[in-house]
Each structure stands twice: as C-alpha cells, then as structure tokens.
Image 1 (cartoon, helix red, strand yellow):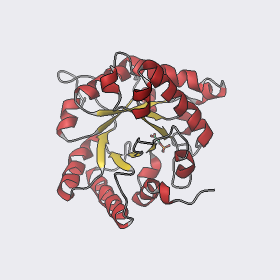
Image 2: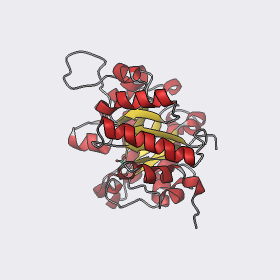
Image 3: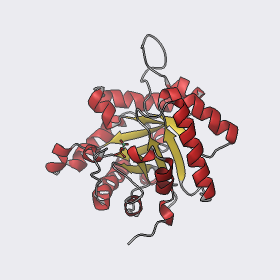
Length: 262
Ligand code: PGA
C-alpha cells in the first residue's frame, strides 16, 4: 500500500492555546522516545482557531514533524462575514488540513451539502487539504442505508471538484452514532463504507485517483481498538476525538503498529 496512514486528533472545543502547546510538546516527546517514524505514519492535530498560532510557533521552533489543521474553514475568502476565518488566513498560519463537514458542524450549525461543497472548494483554493467528514446517523444505520446515505454526502461535497485537485483530499468516514459514544463501529462496519467510498471515487474520477485518496475512520477510536480497524484494506487512518486529548493515549494510538493483536 502506498498511502501513508494519517492519525489526526480532533480536539474540538477543548484545550486553550497554553494547553494545546503543552499537549503537542508532550506528544512529540512521547513519540520521540518511542522512535516514531513519521514517514511511516503521519500525525496531525486539529486545535481550536485560537490555538493555531501558538501551535505553529512551537512546531516551527522545535521543527516537530507533527502537522496541524483547523476544525472548520469559511466558505468565503474575505468580506462582511463576522466571526469567520478564511482559508487564506489559515494558510498563512501554515495549516496543512481543515476538517470540513464534521457531523457536529452539520448538526449544530446547519451545514448542508452546498455549504460543505463550498468549504471544500475554499480549502483547495487556499492550498489546504480538506478532511471531508461524512457518515450516517443511527436512524439511517438501523434502516441499513449507511452506504447510500454516505455516498450521497460524498457526491454532494465533491460536486465540481476536478480530478487534479481531488487526489490530495482526505475523507473521514464517521458514523454519527459512534462519535463520542464509546460505541465503536466494528472493523467490518468501517470497511463496508470505506470500501464503498473508494469504489465511488473510482466511478467519479478514476482508479488511480481512488487509490491515492486516504480514507479515515472516526468514532470512539482508542488505543485498544485501532489496530483491528487499521487492518482493514480501505482504512488509511483515523480521526480521533476524545482519546486525542490525552497525549499518552494519543501516542499509543499513533503507535498502533507496535500493538499485539489477535
Ligand atoms: P470521538 O470523536 O473519537 O470522540 O468519538 C471523533 C470525531 O468526532 O472526529
């Protein structure tokens, strides 16, 4: 497999800038002590907007191989949009990634497919890699419609995104019922939808593009369940919420290849 696994921590509304820099520092120390090879497994954190500048300063000063990103991005590049943060502003802070369309944004901030699509375009215009979050709620899962529902979200989010741009995107399949609930999808559940996403990417673009795109799983990932999830063919990493707030636990997740399974 040529896709480099990505382990990304979504810190949500947690950790102010002092706590965030402390967490990054501790994570870097733990991974250095464990001789983690970042070229084998990439590591990223998604702090709040107010922590990004401090995280950038630390990572630059200490030349840490940890990447960072935002949890959201404005669909607009500038103007009368009070409270928004543009892709250009984020790019100026050296962010690599922006999470887009997280289920909490969709649920609490009314983000629909058109908005998610506009944000994906805004990220690409600013040279930022979108981590596009998609996934079904419990009602849809109970009806057994998780694949069609998630693929419809994918189609909407990628509307008018050309093949030459899309191949760097990261897709995060996060079943809403598994987020923050302790209810983790089985590896087979994760693979069913991640595999279907890759097939759809091949239909929308090409086999080559589909093979290049990293697809993550997210939802109650911990050090105790990651290795089995990562063993699935179409899972190229994880988006971790709660468990990424503790550097010890997050570093154990990053080192999933050293876990003994079975
Ligand atoms: P969780 O969150 O790991 O706390 O379930 C995942 C996410 O929302 O990205």
